Image 1 (cartoon, rainbow, N blue to C red):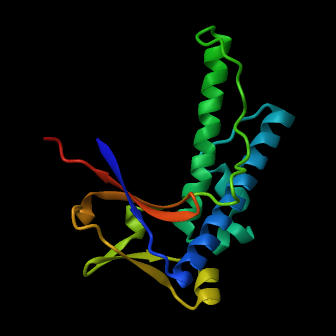
Image 2: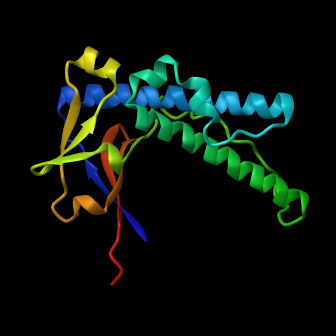
Length: 182
């Protein structure tokens, strides 16, 4: 069983600038993936698989700006939403659901989207988590990673994913972790 803990990011202007840039690039990459999947479906009635978007956008600017595992996670999330849509089409054709279906739409809110880092991309140094950045970010911002405080109530080994969540003009660190069954 998994849980999620949100931590508000402090108002450090340099950090906010980096997080804004990452979330804007995530938004653009996700919308590009949605566009490709929608066009593929509209023009040929074909679905998109888990790795198709990564093959198409591997050399794209927005993909290269982000850390590779974070960019892959963004595109896999897009592919998952389309896989769910294809499942709904089947259920609709079998009469299991009667609601009108809508193909996944573009992300419009505020020009920013969540950036997700799987646990294998993260490292613990003291009481801080090292969050890697893509090569372009390293060059532009002159840092190779972000150091964020590890919540004292969580075990680093139980953390499965770290998300950078833009919400209400603020940023949150979202720790997805495996709960111990009690």
